[in-house]
Every structure is written in C-alpha cells, then in structure tokens.
Length: 462
Image (cartoon, rainbow, N blue to C red; front, side, top):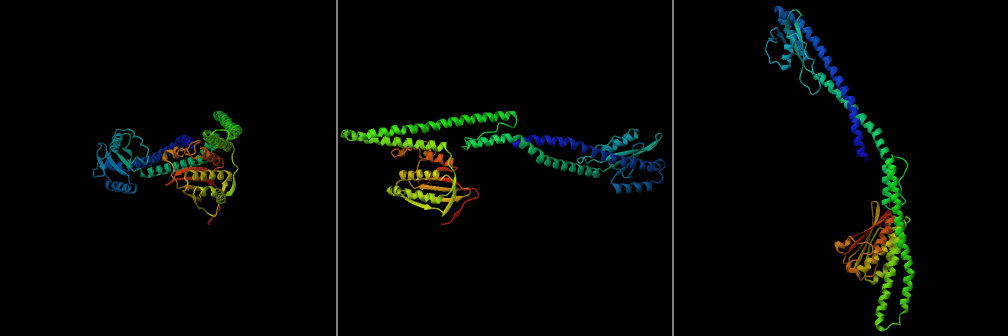
C-alpha cells in the first residue's frame, strides 16, 4: 500500500519538477543560441564590409583571403562569399553547399531577412548559418555566409541540463525522504494499526481491537466494523467453549453414577451376561475418558498459558523417568540425545502434557520399537523431536493427524479418544510453541518447537 501511494506521489512530483525545469533549460538554450547568433552576425557584417572593396574592384584579394583563412582556423567557421549573381567567389576552390547555406544565400541576395536559427540543443549537430549582404541598400554586390559550429553552445546547454536534472533528482530525493515517506506513513498509519489488530486477533489475542478514533471517516467505519466482528467472534467462541466445558462437566457425574450402577450388577447376571457387563464397563470408561479429554481441550482453548523460563532438558528427563515403567512394559527402548541445558520460555505444563501425549502414542502405536528423543537449540527456539521406529502412517492419513476424534483405521482397537494431539496443540499454541507430525523412515517423528527467552539461550555441552 505504501509503495502504491509513493508510485502515485512520485510521478506527480516529477511532473511538477519537469514543468519548472524544462522552461529553465529552454530559456538558457535560447539565450545561448541568440548570443552566438548576434556575435556571429556582427562578425559577418564586419567581414562583409572588408570584402566589399574586393568584390567591387578586385583589389586586395590576397589580404582578404589570408584574413578569412586565419578566421576559419581560429574559430572553425566556414566562410563563403558570393557575388550578386550567386556565384561562389571565396574560397576559390568550389565546394558543395549545404541546403541551409544555399537558402541563406538566396534570401540575402533577394534582400530578405535570414531566418532565425534553430535553438542549439545537444542533439542538433547541424551548424548555425549566419549571413550578411555585401554593399548598401542602393547597390547590392554580393553576400557572405557563415557556417558556425554549435558544439561549444551545445556543450554548455548539455551541462546546464545536467545541472538541472541533478538538482531535480536531489529535490525529488529530499522531498521523498522528508515529505512523501512521512506523508505516506501518516496516511497509512490507521491502516497499519488496523492490520496490526487483525494480526493479533488472528494469532489468538482475542482482546485485540482497532482504534476507532483518528484517521479518515472510511477507516473509522472499517475499524468499528472490525471491532464488531471481533466481538461477535469472541462471543461465539466463548459460547462454544463454555458449552463444551459445561457439557463435559455435567456429563461426568451421570457417567460416574452409571458406572456404579453397572458395577452393582456384578454377580446378579448369569454367565452369559458377564461378557456384556464387562463390555458395558469398558465403554463407560472410554466415554468418561472422552469427556475428560473434551474438558481439557475446552480449558486449553479458553486460557492462555503463563510463560516462564525453564530447562527443557530437565523437564524432558523428568517425564522420561515418569514414563519409564510404562515404556518398559511394552518393551520400548528410549535413546536420548540432548545438551546439558536448554533454557526455553513457554509453559512447562503445556510442554509436559505434549510430551506425555507423544510418549503415550509411541508406546501404544509402536510397542517394542525404539524411541529416539533429541533436543537441539536452533536459531530462535528449541526443538524436541520424538521419533518412534514403528509402522508409521500412510501419507493420506498424515494430514489428518491431530484432528479432533480422528483415529487411523489401523488403530481402531487401540485405547484412546483421538483428542490427545489436538489438546496438546491447543496448549502449545497458547504458550507460543508448535507441534508437527512428520513421516520418518520407518515410523513417525513429532517435532515440538519451543521459543527461547529474549536475548538468546543457554546451552552447554554434556
């Protein structure tokens, strides 16, 4: 937007500068051309008076020829003298006349004023033609014509054009830096503020609002509409999360009561009903777990985690110790590669929950496989990678990993609700971290990226 505004302002400013500088350049070029014309016309009239006796009597031919030769050598002006019959007298050696010289000769001999020469612009290389009649008003005996080189004048005009162009560019640059850019920033400040508010809202800051004061009326109206949209969005999200949380909370007690009543049936059913009783208890446990996970997800989405500095290596070691018995029961071997310390700034609870979900999934879906856990400090963050060497997932299923309630068709019989990764992602995003699942060969790799404190990170080798 700023570039577009500058693209509008700069051409307008360029046109204004051109409107000022072109007349200045033209005035200077005309002035220098007229000065050259007047000087050479005076010279032509002076030599016309000196050549007149030679044309009238033929006396002093050697002297006048020598003077004209010296004049030509000194100035570069080509001099041609004609008699009243338009015959070339000097120089003695005839040369082909240019069209301009022939026209000037004819005008002079016809007692007509010569045309004013064209302005000596740098791109016009033709010489200036200046002439004078020889004789007086009563007796015309010939004409003298000068072909004057205009290179000195053209050089001066070119230098002045360069000076004006340089001054114009300097003015354009200064005006852009001191005028156009501040003006563009001032005009776009309400737009940038609105864009910043939209960015904060998109990143999860539900309290972000645009300033409704300042700026043109159109943008104030847009800011009001944006704030109304944000209010409506927040209300809708709050209602949705409140419904999920309330529904989950309200379902816990009926489910607990239902399970107690089903348990009370133990010993009161025949042998054929024992199997159905066990299945009913299993389903009630699964439903209770789903309700608990829904409540955790609703809480994770509704709250922003407090961010503190903590050592990701120590936290990971703590979770591995807690999961050691469960991993040992499924014959999983864990290999760890980590530095002695990796300070990060996020929510320890969110990272712990995510590690619990990832380790639990690796234990359930890749029993007996090797689990590799690596911690590395990269530019701008710490990366925790948990990779299992199990069967992995098909490429088509990978895009759906982490969606709520989604379970791979190959793992329908494995206990779980399909909400673990979704809850972990919600918690991590609220703490400024991310989680991604990638295909490894073999198995899956889960990457947790956690930010570091402002000013860098601490890392020492083990």
